[in-house]
Length: 325
Image (cartoon, rainbow, N blue to C red):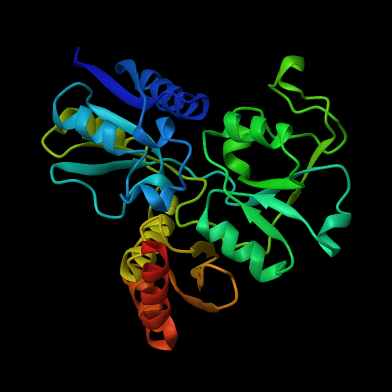
């Protein structure tokens, strides 16, 4: 094994560091030497504006892209749903790790009576916002930004009934409430964890494309790192996330449109579901397809084309126009 040390770039949040250390351990177990370099992204620093108002895709990945291109780090680890569908020139997808759960969950205070009446739910995701309003049109949705620790803390200090999170992120750093406890694991008494927190699975909510998956990127010219990372790649997750991200890219969603997508293997078939919502959740265009697994390469593209032909072109134009206001 060569002596090169693979420098792993990551954001400095607890979840991002957990992901980086997970990749580091897998590489170390294969005999590779590594070191971790943590940086703070613009998306972590500017927390007082909704993501779409910041006006750029890849807000959580841009800083690491620059660090790679300038030679400060060799590879970068990301939550795949945060990564733009078009990577910067010179950077390539080198590994997709086996996917965790794709579920969104509602972390809530007290009982769930508010679901049948008036409620206030927090999320920084247009996709979650639109789907929540589609199901609960009488509710108010407020913006919630920050890493998962920050968002959990804001929920505790607020008058909100609950907030929507990706189950995978909370599980990875032990912040997912236990159904039978009043405490949130991982938060101290000073942070107010004596509130009655619980959660429910939102199995009706279509996840973000690539939700629950981690991706590692490298420089195209770095054959050593790319070869090392190829040993970590999970082909089933790579295929499913490719379909979902192709669907997103064809709709031109980036992270600024309410788009959900999920592809799963069922025996020898791939089952795909994709949705596009209006910002207020009143309009919904969806598609579901089951195809033989060998037809995966253009599945996301064809499904997105159907969405566009069934009113999606007009709806995407309305979304982009509303976000400019």
